[in-house]
Length: 211
Ligand SMILES: Cc1ncc(COP(=O)(O)OP(=O)(O)O)c(N)n1
Ligand SMILES: Cc1nc(C(=O)O)sc1CCOP(=O)(O)O
Ligand SMILES: [Mg+2]
Image (cartoon, rainbow, N blue to C red):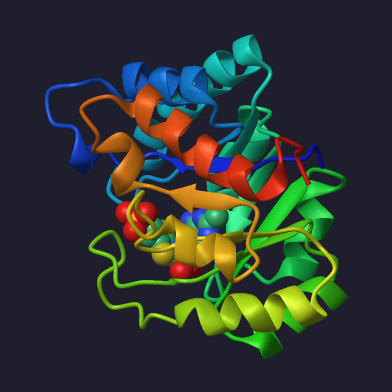
């Protein structure tokens, strides 16, 4: 998969009165280089419609597009990939359907990370690092889990969960070089500027290279 450093996920509850497409376009303009459609409430048809619109937007900006949870929707709209959690379709089954497209897997402990890598995930999510209202019942793993993944796992990983501009330095100091956020980006009055600020923080650790 193409390299990335700032992964923005939709969260329409955080921007009442603003359209999802407008907010995600601002995030892309600010430097988000992967966009995920995450919609836990809509019907399949509603999600499919949003997926087609985001596919068009991300293609226009040459940004990777991932659909959360729904392999059928990812395939229908020709997304670049799908993101699956520990309770979603197993990776081995998902691979049969997705072929060479990207499959990302959520992990919350090192055993899950090892399994995802061994089974052929393209990247893993590592989190939730901090408490988050976006996924309220998920228990924070802390930056210690980042250090474990950094030591052992070779495939790309992205840190997620409660990551804000005020705490992202702790995440970067633990070794993460790819950052994912929902509320901090899409709930911002200026998503583009928030993304630029995240990128500046990441670049302070990478010297500007995508890793
Ligand atoms: C990049 C990324 N990492 C983790 C998740 C969470 O996926 P999951 O555990 O399946 O939970 P839901 O998002 O489906 O509620 C993610 N979506 N993206
Ligand atoms: C969707 C999701 N998955 C997580 C995981 O750890 O797997 S944490 C999370 C919520 C991230 O939202 P915010 O940036 O608003 O905290
Ligand atoms: Mg899921």
